Length: 279
Image 1 (tube, rainbow, N blue to C red):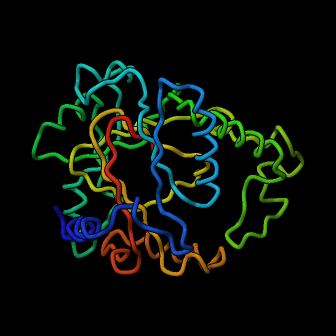
Image 2 (cartoon, rainbow, N blue to C red):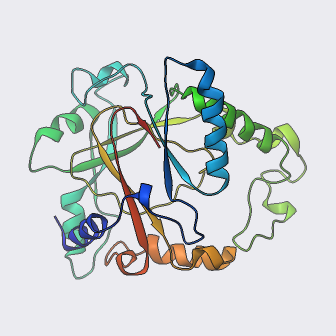
């Protein structure tokens, strides 16, 4: 493990549970709700609680639902959900990343390997390998029943938006829109219109650095196999910032992949995710 990775792991280990932490603006960082598959009458109630929490900037952990079928991270079972083990993929390599970080002139664009999906899965058993495979498109993702209403709300919002791109300072111009001559149904982005999913596969022990998903409206992750420690970061004084200052503060966290300075300028909350958890 590289020195920056050690710094990040120690930072996460010393951070409180996200379920016990609060954002700078005093709202809970994360709350926990339970999905009962035997009682469909409570799905609407659960969905409403989700809606309320997310509207306040509070993340939600829902326990009790998992995508089907249940599979293990195994070369004999992954083909159930992925079409071919010969699929070429690009993976992040923790050993290459550590070598670049230790270099006098680090180049973190040179930390990837090109291998087959089946080879990546088999290498999970190799103590000399630690890799991360992100964003394998999934054209038929399982949607949790308690999120369907929220997806419909997002579609309604997108269908009535004048623009789909807002500049950093929040001053949207007609030219910022996907097509300035149209509003309404034509402006729905494909990823919104069609619930696009992604399969995320990671070897045990790989540390993913802080990042922010650009399309974060109702983004969720469900654990199909294994466990994952998830961390939320809160920048100092974020509750009092305007849009421009907030983006500048985020830059301090997301852009320094050499020294990981976020360990000194941000606070975090962590949560352990396992099968049956949706975040």
